[in-house]
Length: 161
Image (cartoon, rainbow, N blue to C red; front, side, top):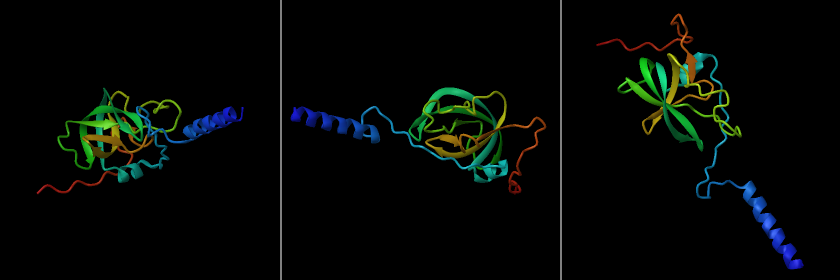
């Protein structure tokens, strides 16, 4: 009986330890990184922080990339205008919607910010392996105002030679 209790105790310890430890070492199991996001409010702060800012029209690609241990949805953005940064071959770029993490469910609980119709302002970081990503899950995409005025001051382009 003592051996049975000892074996049961060891089994419970192994199960409890496994539940508390990261799953990164087990095949087929991904480890999710919990991220706390900084707020870039007003939009000028998002513009200043972004590597690049574009006005474009997103379209779903049906593909994902791994970000922070979760699958982030990739979109193709048809770039209409580059407001900041250098976008080589600015016709179309691949952009991953930065996901929320540790939500216990959807990585886009309020909807994917790039899953919209029409032109939007996209604040970008990257690219990594040819894929840009939105600044944060909250401050990466803004609707383009109907009158075309920007909610931030864009940096001046250098004068043409």
